[in-house]
Image 1 (spheres, rainbow, N blue to C red):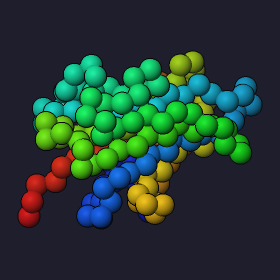
Image 2 (image 1 turned 90 degrees about the horizontal axis):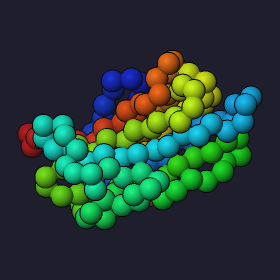
Image 3 (image 1 turned 180 degrees about the horizontal axis):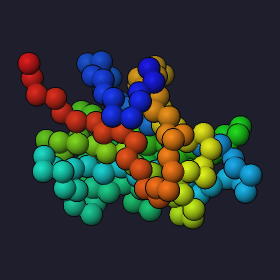
Image 4 (image 1 turned 135 degrees about the horizontal axis):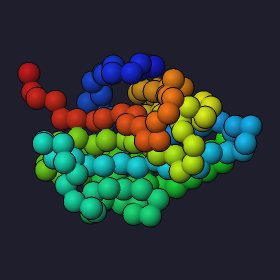
Length: 149
């Protein structure tokens, strides 16, 4: 399922261990230096602590629920992978934010930027980010706890 900007969908109840893959294509200047990061936020949308900012230099949240799995080369570019175990995310985290930053230039110069969220090999959401412009940081997806009906 492709999600457009601002769209949302409920995750299937059995989707407890997620994999997020941020990938992009090689540009004319070579492969861009994109960094995926994940932030665990409280209900008031503040990062719980410095340790709850997961990226290439801090590869796991304190509870181990979120792990940055590193970068890989792809056929046409590169990808960064993140795993999220929803059963291990602490009750103090109301949001899990999947973001990206570019170290040089802007996201408008990065072709084919996309995020794919999957569980058990099933794609749950495909988020194309090919309409970015002058941004150097993007929030690509948010996972949040839904109030019971």
